[in-house]
Every structure is written in structure tokens, then in C-alpha cells.
Length: 328
Image (cartoon, rainbow, N blue to C red; front, side):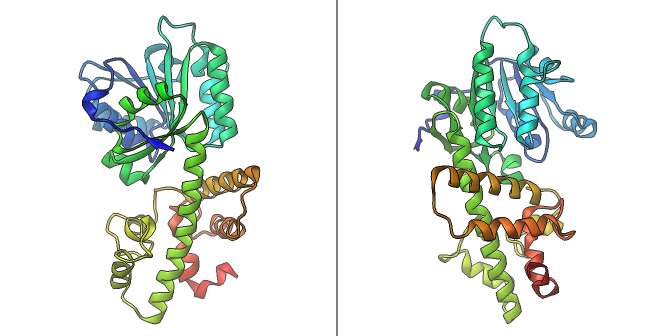
């Protein structure tokens, strides 16, 4: 994997029309940062099925904006199209739905460029890439992100791009509006971005469980959680989930725990990506000693009212509440 970062002056977003499909937990902040850093003359066409979310975006975002009622309408107007959707079937439908999908438009005078930022299974992404190629409508890259809702809002996301070197350079010029310049990576050919993302999310899930165990252990001993986390975060135990997303309420002001785990990266989505990563590991014959435990623990979290529909760090509650009986 290589990082080909260059200065912004070497690749600013081209002054064309942009499309953004999916204004969810991640997409909302991403699209706002995109619009804020696009050339003034560029229009951003948005597509979001939740009317309240769409109206909120239009009310809170400055610049040239249009609303499309379907992916097809986005493709009819936009030159560069970004998709940020929850699951593989949503992405596949957005591209291939026979009545209103992105690929149902006539041949355009210039090729479209599709930047697919969703975290989905590699197989579906490669299928969509093939469908785009067969359509002759343009080019496609997988470009999943890391950094969570806070990173989406701050415009500091990491992007992991799968595609050719030429397409990576074109992608970088666009996604630097939403991410850190030094954290835009060319991970390899089509699918490599998603493989990288899944491996990263699997490791993050492992760390969530480790931090949950450690913080619960310390609190039960009688340690001050702020002091404990302070030590961890300048020592060898430091990780994203101990520093930026500590699961103990009151330790990290901007963590999901501060909002009682409302919003954020849901337990269900976390479990889904863990399953993808475990499947990927099996496909390539990678030995794992933790995967069964990680999968079963997040399965229990999905089935618990303490965690269902909440940010995935809510799994901490299974350790900390009721003496951890939910994990027996």
C-alpha cells in the first residue's frame, strides 16, 4: 500500500457538477465539507430518501445546491458522483436499479466518475465496478473511509482507494475536500480499498472490546476512569477507542458515550463489517484466534436492548452493567 499525497495546489477539485447520494451519519458531514471546498461555480446535487435529513442539509449548507429524487437524476446532472450508503444491497440498487439507477442514463458526452465510499463487501463492490465498466458510462473506484462521524464533520477522514493509479489521482483531488491530505491512500487495484477498510474495522472492533474490558476492570478496582484513560493514552495501550471514543461516559467529551451512544457507527453496522473481515480472512487463509469471540460478542450486543441501534461502543455496557451477565 502506498501513500501518494501531494500539495493541494497540484490537484484541486475540478469545476464541474458533483453528486452526493446518502446523507446519513457519515454522508451529511462529508457532503457539507465537499460543498464548502468546491469551486464556487460548481453545483452539488444531493439525493437522500429521508426528507427531514435532506431538508436539514439544504437549510444548513451554503453554496449552489440541487435536490434529485433518484440516483438516475443525479447521474443526469453530475459529472462526479459520490455514494455513501449503509450496505451492499443499497449500493447495488443505487447503481443498477432498472428504473432509477445511476447506470440507466444514456451515454453522456463525457465519462462519469463514480467514487463509492460505502463500507460494503468486496464482492458487491467488484460487481458494481464491472457493471459500470459494462455500461460504458464512466469509471469507478472503491474509496471507503475511516474516522467516524466526528471525522466526517471535521473533514479529517482517511480514504482508502482501490483502482488504477490514474483514477487514484482523480479521486484524491476530490476527497481531499473531506479528508486529511496525508491520509489518502492508494491501497491497490479495485477492491483493495474495501479490503483495507474491513481489516482496519476488524482491528478497531478488537480494540473496542479490549478497551471495554480494561476500563471496566479499572473502575471495578476503584481507579478514576479519567486517570486510567490518561495513563493508557500516553502508554502502550493507546488506541482510537481509548482516546477519541472512550466508552466510559465523561472521559472523552466528544465520544459516543457522552451522548449515551445515540447515533454514531451502529452496533449492527460494526457487526456487519466484522463479518465481512472475518470472511475475507477465511478466503485468504489467514489464521485468527480472536474472530469467533469478536463476532459472538457483537452478536450479543445486537440482541441486547443496551446496544441495539446504538453506537457500537455501547458494547461496553455488557461488561459494566449487571456484573457482565449478558456476556455469560
